[in-house]
Amino acid sequence: MTRRTRTAMFLGSAAVLGAFLLWGFSGLPSFGHGLISAGEMLNRVSVAQRHITDVVTAVNFDYRGIDTMGEEFIFFAAVVGVALIMRPQPGEGARHVEDYAFGRAVPPTSDAVRVLGLGLAAPTVLFALYVVAHGHLTPGGGFQGGVILATGVLLIYLAGEFDHLHGLYGEAAVERAEAAGAAAYVAIGFLALVSGSAFMTNVWPLGTTGHLVSAGSVPLINTAVGVEVGAGFVLLLNTFLRQALVIRPEPTRTPLEEALNRSRW
Amino acid sequence: MTFLPYAVAAWLFVIGLYGIVTSRDLVHQIICLSVVQSSTYVLLLAIGFRTGGAAPIFIDIPVGRAAVDPVVQALCLTDVVVGATVSALLLAIAVQIHKRTGSLDPERLRESFG
Image (cartoon, rainbow over all chains, first blue to last red; front, side, top):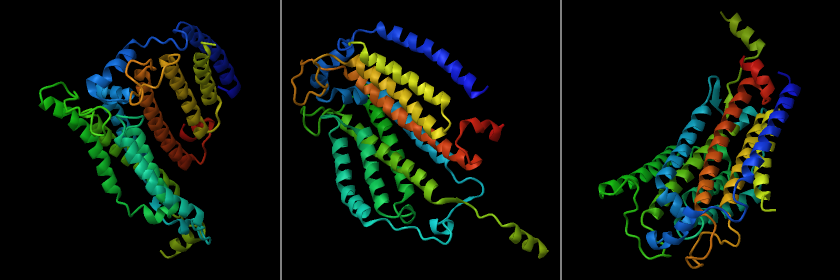
């Protein structure tokens, strides 16, 4: 099929699809007057029932906690998948950038990037911990905080030279942290079973509304998710950066070398 | 005017699909997929919106004050996470395709892989 026929076919079907979408949307309640009966009920009861002030977090990690567990494992599987797809292929090896850029030194990281990266890394990590710890009080939580945490590590990569750093921080430890975070979420679910309730029921002491330690198991789950997502994103960044900077094709022999090699036999 | 956010969602969906169909670059195609996905964020948030509603965070507003729907916002978080993981996987595949074939043009994949 040529591009022209394909585009023409798409435009035809997209017009039909667009018309159906608009027709369907026109049957929705008009904007600003949504049918939010479940949401409205949760807005009324969450604070009293779970001592939690961020109702979005209450939905994610308490009322719908088991769905979010599935979501966490989607992320876990994707990190494993990326690592698998990006494994060194036959004929590839880890080599220094200097070897590849023949006769040309790699320019050093500029001082401005170094100072900014190192200066911002610690506040970024602190902010990540804040976002994870306050997930049940204000907007935030494990997913958001975990991504910010990985940004802190990326700043350290930027400030240093990746191929000197990537061996240092202990990839195995980060992999274990990721797995431990995922396992901790499931373990919190099972603890509810042990106490005689359904899986993932919030059976922990609820504490005082608005305090850092409150809302039962929600801050614990947020911490587990924060560790898992932070470690997972560090692994993702590490895989992509290593692919771009370190993994190189093995040098192939030139025809002359090939001939010299053969003449020895 | 009350229909506008839904129209934006439909537009993002269709224009993203157009990008996927006509793209000559796998990375561009993956970004077009993200555009398609962002239409679902607009749709979810538009469905949950309520005129005059506050954010569903009751730390500094009293319980009982009208707020927007927290359930679709929670779904939106799931949506964002799934979108990020799909992009990461597809980008990893694009890297390997580029290494194998030296090209990111989807039109040339058939020649390379048969």
